[in-house]
Length: 303
Image 1: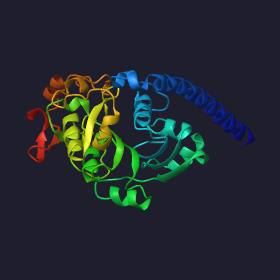
Image 2 (image 1 turned 60 degrees about the vertical axis):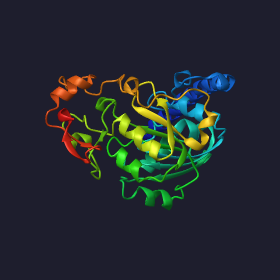
Image 3 (image 1 turned 90 degrees about the horizontal axis):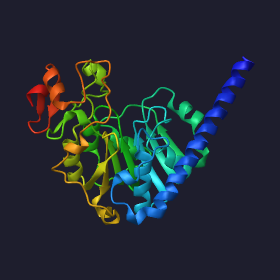
Image 4 (image 1 turned 45 degrees about the vertical axis):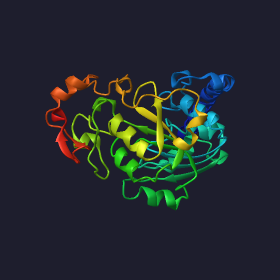
């Protein structure tokens, strides 16, 4: 019992030391951003990763600096245990107040085991969210307005949750999209509570929404599309009221193909699925997706 306890303490100390090294590395990249802030002409000049899935840490630091936000109020939905997330680096290095929402079991305990929670103010809602309860949850924790950063990644009904949110709810918005849905379609998952992509279809292929669907919705919500992460699965938007503080030219929202060329393959165990949109469309004959143009479920290979 004592040995197990000692080992647990040592493991935690080792992980904390390793995390501190990662943070120091991130701060070196941050100084580079500070020195070149006015000269940055594209998102790929901001890329760096500390705790994010890919290059989101660097992109978000650029936006926070460009918008002169140094005391951050954020919401992140879909964090799992928070060890890899879009806002953890912010929480570890800046003044902030955050709301984390995720159904992961024992989420409070897991976050407290890896994070210096005492450094800032953190609220944790440990449950599923959907299009019907999201605004009630935000209001419960006083996160229904004056938000600097909103991050959404729930591998499912992201579009429907996003649709339910008020216009211009935050200055910066990041949301996951499904690059395998292609650049022309306006499609998403059906609006099913507690959506599980692998229960819905054995391949797990149906998750999130197409980039075109997300971009068109966000334009209606009062945002401008800025670009994506390196892997092409997270899209970044800026509230149109703050767009003049971004130095570089915005992407053409009628030309999204470059952002739907996935630089990852989550289907390695499924030989019939590839990174190719055309091949997947031909092979997935039994998959139904929600077509936003027809407002109905259609077979993916028929759209």
